Length: 305
Ligand SMILES: [Zn+2]
Ligand SMILES: [Zn+2]
Image (tube, rainbow, N blue to C red; front, side, top):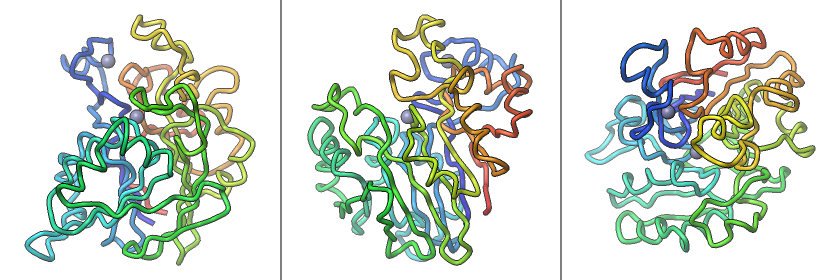
């Protein structure tokens, strides 16, 4: 299985256009040891030719330009992206769909009922695409037992499960969480049995998750914040990390502690907010991750399982 990180940053990217936090300012000025990152998305293939895109970030056009296999060039109009799985309906995970509107072949969109509802009501993006390429929407089962395959993406199998989270700010049910607002996905390469767990938004590792996550050879999880009060401490937000669906890395019950329970498999943090000190390669926080063998995803990172 080939996993390619198209973008490793959380919403806003790194640096964020209007942000002058220590990281964003330092990256612009070249005074910190860090590299820029686009908004989070990965693509996965089981044959190196046909790819499934996880989320469509606002940066998707740049991400496609930076990864040649997504443009195989077999016809006058062509793409290696055969299907798109949406893990939630957030702006930074769906806006790229507008950029993928060209062509006569319908986009194959895999999402839960809750995400489909948000993307045809509070945010009309899937309806609007109907006036361009059009879409084929496929339901994603979230019971954790029912796997599905995607016809044009051979050799991969997907098992999704609902995660504790909230719908996007624009959602008609913003304050009324439903199963399926956010999912995590276990991706399996059928020929090799290799598996990757992907959940860029993960507020809490609830008891139904370890049975799936522990099957994975690589665990890619939410790396948004270092502390639960990161945004409060910087005066940027009044909410804690956990309250907006992101388990922080540090502290009791944090992601480092939780990831340590999964033994000697590859562990990668993705969806990293621009405020997070782990973006600075020489930071004390990054050194702590190193001691726990937890990697920090970057744009262009390839993971071959
Ligand atoms: Zn996001
Ligand atoms: Zn910033």
